[in-house]
Image (cartoon, rainbow, N blue to C red; front, top):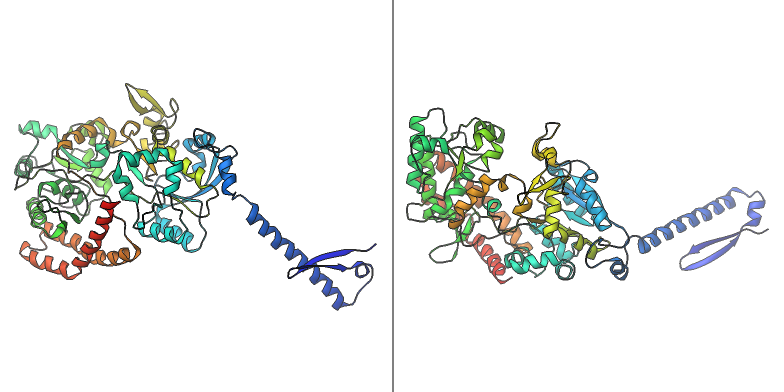
Length: 560
């Protein structure tokens, strides 16, 4: 019987008769030849199998993808598919998202299984960069906080898909939000006219989440000295003086940081007129300006310096950690603060004594609340890569979370399992609010839901959010500032790669210097007689070029 061996040489298939070789002993040289032939055959077959697996594996043709897709309703796909998602974890996020109730529920609903690559926050940037430069792309970057420059760079290279057509065809919920709120499209459209990523959106009507932290006053102190909630910067100064002179055990004002106080006061001094840091519109000319060199900004710092130098502000406000601040708040140590609902975070007994404050009328009659966030949060929350096996189904998968039902599922979970409707409000059930193991509310939520600490793609709606911003105390405080909100709130702009690199270099000097000098002016380490020198230093750092880049980006934003 003859034994035939087939192998491949170049483009030709050749046949070898090896029966005699197998029947008789051969010398070493011929034996080595046969072994080499068999080894070559094995390698050739392996290469052929790998090539075939790449061509006919999990990545279907577009026609096959669409055949398997249900364009409406659930499940999203007829036959199950798997998506690999790279995601950033919140500080307390469970290590295995396969154990989270809503993800298991959503898999059953959609027929789409997700393989999560969960990355802790401290390693997120490094691992995200490694995946990008190493070419080991996931199917999706989910809540991975992709920097704007990277979105544009890898979008133009083709590593990230253009989403314009996918949104138009397969994202009716997100498309509707863009039609109702044109600023969403403006915020996520890049200089080449393309959309490469989807954001987290805060419902424009959810004023509380867009304005907090807000000012709060201890009502017992107001009542004791027969004071009204301050309405002007002078009123507030007198309130703080009254507390300091009569209540030695109280701190007139304290917060987690000085930024909270500045955020409240900006609108009293006509700066940050569009809610952004550093740049805004001049209220007199409507021109783009760098407001940390304006007279209004200087006057605001002079006012805060006055409060600090007279010890009306907690003296360690620049260094206090959150735990100490919360401990002080829980002891009722603050006569006033700028924070989130104290009743939720200082403890009910002490926290419910606080009432929301008002924007203060400044020395020139200006009275606005400028700390207003654009509805669009971080834009790099959901990116579909070129490796994705089914972009259409993936777009449908994420689009659900921009709907009313999807927002409820993501933030509240399942009715009677994690939440119940009480008097028209959605509230977590008792096992979450009063966890039998003594866990905090946030810790108990993490047993069932995945939203804590990640800023996920989707829409956050007031009626489906049972956090501190939706507490009655917070909603009432937000309602007080609504009549004073600035007219527009800008999102961060998008830049070309060249603009972004140059702007980063300029901002590293300019913005860092602004923050350093801001603190020095407030604590008195820098005298206000040095103001002109401060402005001149900023100009010399390249402010004109900085503003040219911002102006070009702003003009594109307006045109989007």
